[in-house]
Length: 158
Image (tube, rainbow, N blue to C red; front, side):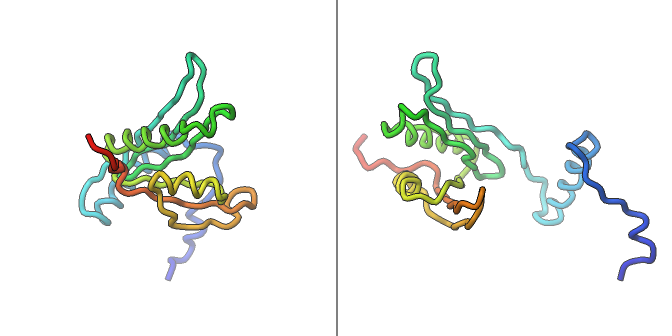
């Protein structure tokens, strides 16, 4: 049961952007919540993972994401149109996963459009489909993939 007059004491509102007091509140309260849930202080620092491909001075592709709390998320993979189909995307993903592993990530998640091409590409790189997200962005279906462990064993001889 809620105390009488509680609604009059608490004012909720939308604000335009984060501000220092909000960030201080989050740092303080998340640390306390983590201790209650997990029994210890945990490192939730997000570390950027950035991989680029260049042809001379020109960017040809990028893989961007983060590593945090033992996992990685590949947010963006983009290869310039003329460079697609040459294996560059796969190389960027492998470098992304290797760097994320160096930062302590044991697994990587990503989200991509639900197309046959995307499925073949990520599954060839060792990712496993874990969810289908209907009407995720702009009414289009998306897929959630996981790769674990991040570093794939090679089948050749050393």
